[in-house]
Length: 167
Image 1 (cartoon, one colour):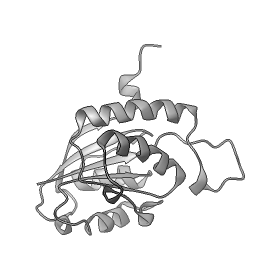
Image 2 (spheres, one colour; image 1 turned 45 degrees about the vertical axis):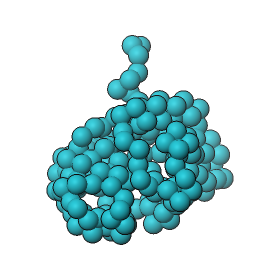
Image 3 (spheres, helix red, strand yellow; image 1 turned 45 degrees about the horizontal axis):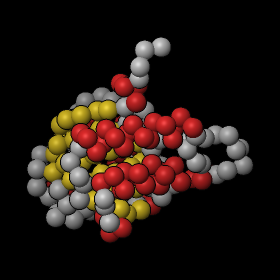
Image 4 (cartoon, one colour; image 1 turned 120 degrees about the vertical axis):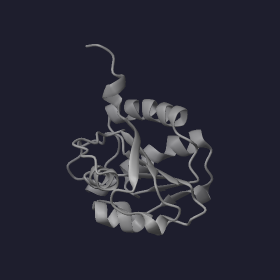
């Protein structure tokens, strides 16, 4: 059995029209939501063996406090350029290349790839995968190369509005 946690980056800013999509930073809400995401991830998830992230600025900024909280080394936190704007099929291929000594893998990335991948692996429709959300999956595989549609069970799906106070 393997574990996979998919994390969507925190909310990014659209304030500067001149910035390329790749270079968008987090906005104020994203920075606030990231605090809660980090706390819940550390509390509810096992420490990962490896964290892959899209090298876009917003995903890099999202992974930094997670890496610090989990005390991951530089060798355990790796940029995955193929994860930027990747489809579910592309993410599946990327994950299938993971080394088998890794039992819990975290991927910090983007939508719609993450929601589509979660649906593909679990055969559960994920209509919305909000920013600062995570999906934690248990995979019925022994080798990452065996990763295929339907091999996963969604164990936890968490996002900021689950924890929002009354309005």
